Image 1: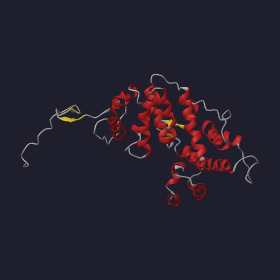
Image 2: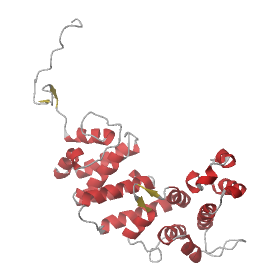
Image 3: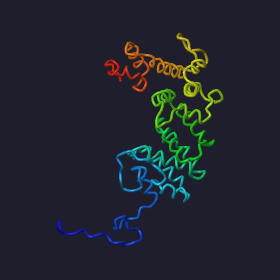
Image 4: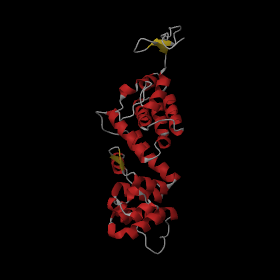
Length: 287
């Protein structure tokens, strides 16, 4: 065949082929494969959109079909697999698909969706993205179900159990993302640190989130010389870190040595440092 000859169109030879939008025969794609496309590209079709794109049910009809067909748990497991294997270009489709399962799936699907939440939402940005999509899918309703509230609480509990210092870092580094903050989540989950049966380290973080540093200090005031009896070294480390995060907010360009000292002592990151201090060469060296 030379370059001038037309390439013959494929002919429909079995029921696995369908006519596409330009009249050509192509292989039929089932809903599970459309789900995989959506998780990777944010679209059920073989097209990747580079720019920002609002996700909605119209972009994920395959997920609705699978949920209605009783395959919701399979969808959730596929979401987990793609997320943990890092097979997606963006997090938005993953979070949107998980939100659809949590909001529109049957009971086993919802349970499984909330069960894997800490594995898929690895940082607060992911959690806030998930919460935002859940709100969008639930409109016009604005309330949170008990299962949804408990899942949000469990996310913080699991993160604190695994690594309380990392949670303290995350809640101060990612204070607000996607239009949501930790305090918003605390308010809507009816978070009551005093009533919650949690370890001291998480209690301190919960108090900080829900009521601010002053209340956390009132509950956990620590002297400069030693740790009060009955409080773990981990809890003390969390409090000292939160204290450093609050202290550095008050510093300005005249306090660069103190800022650098807090950065080195507590491993503070750019999100903790006042903007005017970030312009300092000394601060830039360590950040």
